[in-house]
Length: 169
Image 1 (tube, rainbow, N blue to C red):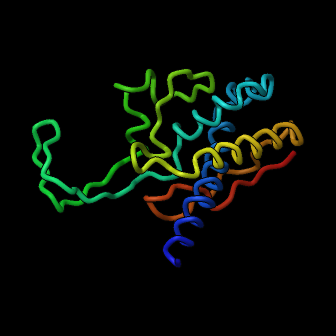
Image 2 (cartoon, one colour):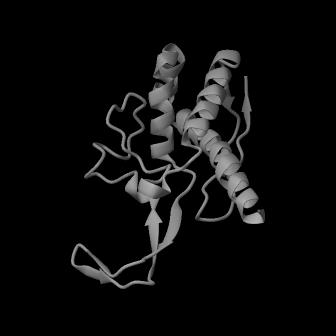
């Protein structure tokens, strides 16, 4: 029960909070993209996907290998621990044209921010709804929102997020 509560808190809360902060930070650093989103709120669903791809809050996830496998000529024995680097995968030039560019109109966006396969995030639909709501409402209710100072980051390398993002209207 405790493990489930910890999972729900970390996955359901931390990821959404950090995607919100990371997303606004990305938008403030790309004023052309923020202006496009302010001019056309219909971009919001694609923008949410791109903001999650561009600076995903979960950078690393670990898994244990259940069977001996080989990947690209490298044997990985059963019982090995592997680290999946979502932030890196989401910037793979083989999957994303111009991967280091924030493009809120990106159409083909198979990011891994919610994982994949049997480990795909159960809360992905709720997270998308929460993110669309928070970004949509801030765009609507605070159209002049602007950055006051550089953000401060939380320590750590698994979950990437801001400690604070100071803004004003």
